[in-house]
Amino acid sequence: LSVINFKWKWTGSFPKELASVVKEEFTKAMLESVKGLETEVAQGTPVGVGLGGHLRTAIRGEVLTHLRGVVAVTGASAKYGDIIEIGRRPGPISKEGVASIMLWVRRKLRPDVLAVERLTRRATKRITTKGKRGGNPRERAIKSVTFLVARKIREKGFKGKFMFQKAEKKMARRIAQRFEQAKETVERLMSDK
Figure 1 (tube, one colour):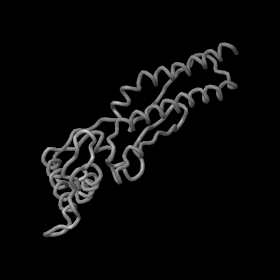
Figure 2 (cartoon, one colour):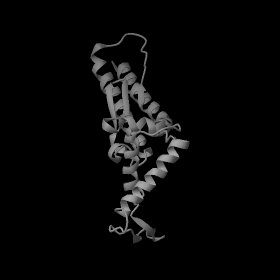
Figure 3 (cartoon, one colour):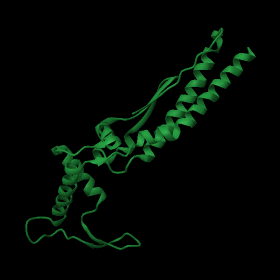
Figure 4 (cartoon, helix red, strand yellow):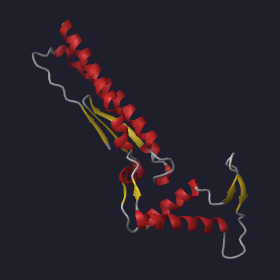
């Protein structure tokens, strides 16, 4: 979650007819800042994580007022956003967590592939769907990799990606410049009145 707040103190008299201009200028600045931050956070978000693997597309920015905006993970993926942002300590994994890991394994690791051509990344050997003993070999491979990944997370946890923190740091100067520009525009209009 990233929040943008802007404070501006005006000393002296403030013409009421300029109130709409002030609101309009700062709303534009806030909208540009929120959209820029939303883009930066999405670019720093890993692909294929979250409920349904859509964490990146669940990042949304919203202008609350002309002086306040927010960028956050919305919808069903919201609880995964915090975990991916700050990481996870070692500890037990819920059944829901194991199911999410299994979905990630299916999408990310392509467990039906035994060998991959080095240059083209094309599958050269695949596991067949007809197993000799005990079911589908693809499913066994998926379950096996899921178990290994879950065990590693249970024992060691994982580091966060800090996509919100990095985006805020990267965008801070640009956001400040944009609000300074809006402030200067308003001050110029006020001096003309």
